[in-house]
Structures are given as C-alpha cells and as structure tokens.
Length: 640
View (cartoon, rainbow, N blue to C red):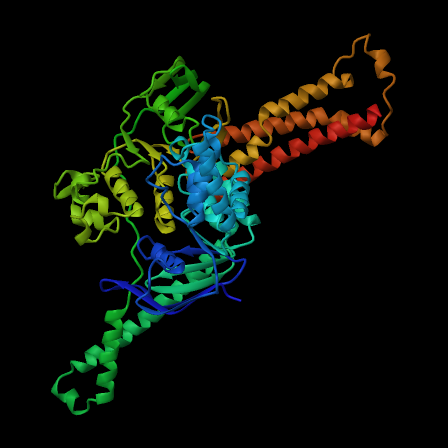
C-alpha cells in the first residue's frame, strides 16, 4: 500500500508552474532520488510531501498516521544547544521534558538541593504520563547508533557531525518516510560512506535530493525527475536513467521539429492572400490557432551553462616543489614530512576528513604559509585564481552585477569584451536577476556566480575548494569537461568521488597523524593503490627472502635447519624457484606504468588509451598480489 500519493498536483509561483498536474506515488521500502536542474522546484516538492506547503490544485493523499521526517540542507542557526537537546527537539511536546530531565540529572553532581530533587520528581511524573521513558530509550538508541557526543554543544562539532545530529533528530521520530535534501553537502568521504551504509540498512522509505552521482548510483532504487513542471518516474539506477533520458530527449526533439515544420507550413498557407481566402477551411484556421497556443505554451529544455576560462600566460614547467615540509599552528603539526613535485598541467585532487588540514595544505602549496621545517619552492609566472567554498568573496548586500565586476557593464574574456548581461546569461542568470542582491540567491546560484567571477580572472593555477556543492549534475558535467581540457595547473579539494575520478590526474590524501600520501589517478585509483601500496609489497618481498634462505646465499649455520624442510613436488619446486624472477619482472612493469601515468601529458591523450593503461596497472598489481600469496602458500607447504 502506498505511503503517499499525488493526484494532479499543481503549484505555481508567479506565471511559472513548478508543478503542472503531476502524479507521484511512494511505496514502503523505496529509496527514491528526486533529480532536476537548480530552481525547478525540487525542495518545494519536498515541502509539499511533508505538509509544510499546500498545492494550488490537486490532492495529496497520505497513509493514516504516517510519520514523515525531514533533513534540511542547513543546520540550526542556534549553535548553543547540546546534541541531546537538538535531537529531542524532533519529539514535539515530550522532547522539551526529556531535555530538561536530562539537564537536571546532570546537575545533580553539583547541586542535589531539595528544590532540584523536587523538580526531578515532577519531571519523572510528567514523563511517566506522556510515555516519556520509551521515548528517552529511543533517543539513547539513536545517539548510540549514530555515535554522537550527547552533551557536547552543536558549535563544538565538525560539519559532518552536525549533519549526523540533524539526521538523528529526524530518525528519533521513527519515520515511515525520510526526506533528505542534499544530505552529502559538507560531509567528508568517511561521512558520506557512513550515510550510504546506514541508508542501505534502514528499513523505511527514503526520498532524497543529491548532486553526488556515486551516492545516487549506490542508493537509488528509482529516480523521479522534475523537468519543466512535469514529474517522470524512471525505474532502476542512475546509469539506466541517463540512457533512457537521452532517448526521451531525442524523441521530444524529433516531435518538436516535426511540429514546428507543420506549423511553418500552416503559417505560409494562412498568409497566401485573397486567393487562398476563397478556399480557406475554417477548421484548418482553428487548428492553426490551437497550434500557435501549443507552441507559445511549450516550455523548452533549460539551457546549459556556458563555461570558458580566461587564459593567462603559461607558468614555468615547475609549479611547486615540496621537500620534507611540515606545517601547523600553535605547536600542532597538521602536515608532517610531506614531499611532492607539481608540474604545469597537473590536476591534483586533495581529499581527507573534515578538519584534517586540507586548507592548510593549500596554503603551504601556494606559499601563503611558511613550513616549520623542510622547503617549499614555487615556480615562475604563477597567476592564481581561487574558488572559496565559504563564498567569502561574495558580498551578500551587493547585486549580482556588482559582485562580478564592480558595477562595470562589460567583462573581458580572452581579450574580447562581453556585455555583463550576456556573460551572466551564459551562467543561466536571467536579466531580471542581475540586479538582485546576492542574499536572495539560492546555493546553486551563488556557486554559479562564483564560477562566473572566477573565470574572468586570468589564471594558470586554478585552486578550487569544494566547487561542486549545490551545482546540478548537468553543470557538474560541464565543469568536469572544462577542467579536463584546462591547460594550466589545478588544485582541487572535493569529496565528490565521481568528480575526482573524472578530473584529477593525481591525488594527495590525508591518512592520519599529518601524513599526506601522493597517489596516481583519482578516488577509485587511490582505493586500488592503498590496498597494495609499494611499501607493503617490498615488505612482503623482504620478509619472504629473509624467511626462505634457499632463494639467497645460505650460510653454513643455516644448512642444518634447511635439511629439515619438507621436499616439494618437482612442479611445485620449479614454480617456487621461478617466483623471484617473475616478481622482479612484474615490479619493473608496474614502475614503468606508474611513470607513464605520472607524466603531466598522460591524461591529454585518447581516453581509451588512458583506460587501457590504467587497467593494465591494476592487472599487474593484482598479479603481484597473487604471486606473493602463492609464494607464502608454497613456503607454508614446504615448512609443514
């Protein structure tokens, strides 16, 4: 039985219909992803689902006693509440009693006066009457399950933990339907993976909005698209949606082309003059009028952002070289003994937990922070453009135009002047929004304005700190394409796994205690390499050589021990004797492939050639692991 159902639901703000007689049904156990361009009304649809907004027309049917919980994009403005208080805030009425009871119990350690004990007894009686003890147990279970510090203030938590607290507030109501609006925003990779695993194991229904394609692909059992006021349901995962959507758009384009051709023919006919009027068919005239109305009512596919970078003079071949550098603040080391060499054309991804020190590493690489030890050498002719995830460069009181170019009517892109209205339309800002204050913009619009501002600056070193937040998938893919073809150097901080895989050529990863390791490729390449880092292979090899004296020179003292070794079959002994040479060949091949991939021009070649080399590197690495495993197996057999 359905949890919730829309029947011919319509809603409009002004003359534009966000929802135009749409139908929607959500069933128990579904994980539905709501997709669509920025500004199409996805968050508004979510507000209708939870009952916070009423539609202009149509009906919304909800299962009797259905519990719906909502996780908003933003955390509460009041950061002085404790985690326990925020979570109990999800329980109407009894939540305030539970929060006060919790604080009174904590205060008993310092004040056990008769007045405090009397208040405690009053609260106990009220909770007894309101079934409060069962609800308190529910709160404690959620806090334990989500591993939250109950008595810490919200202001003391990282962005990821704050999002987890808000999820706990939603879950404590035991909802039948959980609504998540951009749940991965401001979460680090560990937080995103935790949320994925949690939702996969949760038994309720979920409807979520996200721009994270890896998150979408892993979780969604169905995709619902909001496009030009219409809702379309696409069964299956994200890859299936992309294929079916492309086919549907092709059919729509073909239908519109045929309609436009027929309309043009009828317009020619109606204008043929007096001779044609004698034979004019009034039914045909009415049909033409209907076609005109249909054409004027047609809502075209929203345009795509047009992205072009302002080119700068090429930098020197060396962009930055770091040797054994450490950095930190107030005696705390954040980056420890770090070395790397970045050359012109490298696209470097930086990933790590929230608070690990990614911004500190950026400052170190840009020469804005002096190392406490080691050296940082910057290259020549560097022109830096910076994308700030906090959007601090935008003045919320100024208009869109004034934030972009200080009130000037034109911008200069690659030596050519362009009117600011035309330039902002490339970033999907209609003329009427150009004089609006930045404070009125949505998160996605602010990010597009930041990109528009960034791309007017001549740069050969582009620094982007979380550029993907709030961008729709279409804009993300265009940004990926632009950065993949960028001739300068890129430093990119991101938690978007698909974006990293599609853009960067190397990845710097924070792996604990200030250690930053350098890996070839993107996020998935890092996952493969960290499972078989070269240091572990060397350690296995050295261990095997040490434990098996028969492969190296055997001393006189070792010979008696060797006599006790069990004799292998002829075939097994031949295999064991041949393993060292095989390992040497594989390691040589692996080093050669890694050298190819590390070259700045590697990702400039054909994508198929790139994929073949990456697959070969993975295959060689897997074979190395298998050889070592076989070596250990044969040694164990010989020792037994």
